[in-house]
Length: 497
Image (cartoon, rainbow, N blue to C red):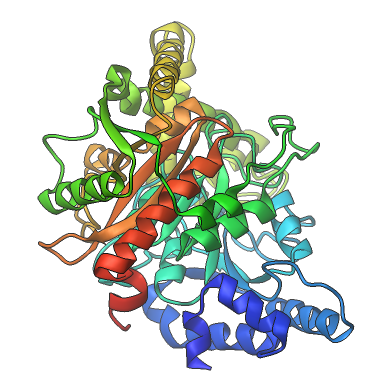
């Protein structure tokens, strides 16, 4: 049973479909693993034991009846606690939603259930997805399974940590400024931000509506592609959903061939502030791509240097608007409602008690940026920078098929090291933010361990909008080459908890 937790998602689904193992056995093995290690990792905020076993039994019943099972039927998954899940608490890592049980499923949640995926529970996250370390959760910090004294990334640190701790073979995250890719990089897992609008946001509790994007997290590129295919596609319930076919991501992941591709190295993603081991592993990855037959050229995208300040005006501005709905009147926490206070007083007391420091910081920053007399100077200017970044991407993709860079400037930093320095924390997303501003597709794939601290390093691959298959083609090739040369860092070298 212990071996079941080390299967890939593809291997697990094949074993369930063939009858070599039951979906219930697979689910129970992962639930046992969560019971054994999650007290130390704190990847999960809620474990839905009853629901997971019921879903697994349903898959076994379908197989027993001779029904054809989907490519992920019976595979366990950890779901970031920002997607509504009918009958299961959804907190977004915040006290203001403590105990809230949604009456409906997000589209992503529903598609997972329809695919026969077994949802184990909801994972820890920075409150309302605001953070880069999962230290902003109201329910305690998640540890990085490689070194529990270090951060697992954020905001989706719980999902990435669940993968690295072998608590689940698949996970779902959301990426607003890098919150899938950055945790993937620092935990040695694969994280993908699909093209904006290609995965439904219906039922995804909004942080920054023009930036948020749900996506797959996995331990291998093929597993990520299988999950991507299961959750993507047009949704009439989401007004920003793209009505177009899902790119052939699974086929691309199996291709593992970059011959003839032209790959651009982003000049602006390097230099001062980048850890030596990260740079070394990135350069090795670039050399691997050359050896595999790709043409590698340097590309300059000068507006990328403005992405971080633009993001930290746009995202808080949208957050200040989106989080206005948490007013103590409709759902969630209510404080001070003693019959003698006005609605405004109850709202103020509830928001004071329910929101954490980082959420309050971003609400205040966003409200200021949108205020009369400052809108054009701040929010309006940031949107102009966003246009410049999109133009830089367009110019680059006219010359190359994909862009590559380090996913993060450093490996996982110690818990608490940047807690009192917001600017240092924000710099963790330096390389990932431009793709969110432009809305194109991006992936982080492991490219070895940094020699100075033996912690994972991620290679970021960026593709044009609706060319997500290119991510998987390059990512699959890099993964295969690195595994052949040095072994898969997570599957072969990850320390036992």
